[in-house]
Image (cartoon, rainbow, N blue to C red; front, side, top):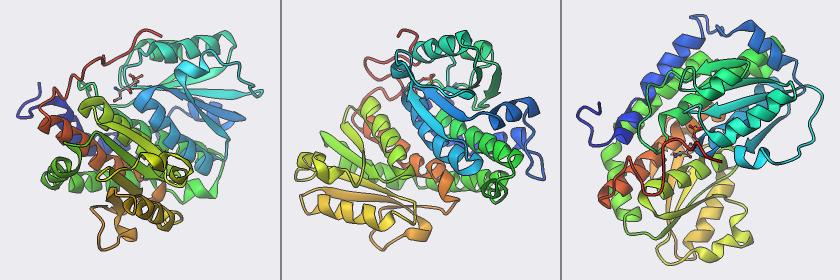
Length: 359
Ligand code: M6R
């Protein structure tokens, strides 16, 4: 039931702070220690490589996961688009561990990979929103997203829940490996900060609706750009905009833009810079400037600690590694309000199904 909400998507965006709190209390105790199955933590700890597999938004959550696993566990991690990996002939190490990300647990492309993984006797975990789903039943381990049903075709709370669960898991494995980076990362506290930060952004939704009307409703093309973790969020942000508002959008590595794609910038093209990482903030800002001087209308989603006077949307400070939990929220809302103000069916965009059960 969507209650007072016009569309499920807005309800699901609004539910994200509670999902963060729920995951923190489900998977960590009051001292901040994880309550995960020690056997699972051990299986990942002894892996020589982690492979994360997903499609669409789940793949994008995997890209964030890679950064966290590598930083907190020091285990080399690869992320794969399921439909590609299924028919690749990857060179595998002796003891890989596979993590499947799937909101529905039913995505055929991901399942095809899992069937191969099982045939080869490798260990796997499915992180999913649906208990007893196919991917959950067929993997060795399952962690649930506890996000409640996600009805809107555009995935929102599953993305942030997947990132939160990956953060908890990466911290747990990192602790088991006695990594200082893991000891320094208080995941329970950070998820609390994420919850309040998300709420603060959601409370500003009217401002975001105004931006959607001003910049996106009449656009035919748009860009999200960023570097590192911000680049991964640019991919997810662009996907949200495309799938429900039909504005052709690209998420792009901001430094790569000038190597060709900047030719697409015309008078008025909206370009959103995501700026949450101290190391690359200045670089993304100058890349934005390059688009501005070619006629783009530029906007920013910037972390408070890095803000400049003319930034458009400010997100609260949080550990840089999990900024996607906050930076994606304005992008979800921009997509939502663009679709809404174009008079489209936000929850049921054309040509799409909620879960893709064919390869
Ligand atoms: O259920 P899954 O997480 O496996 O679904 C994967 C994709 O089909 C899904 O994330 C899709 O990209 C969404 N429509 C994105 O909003």
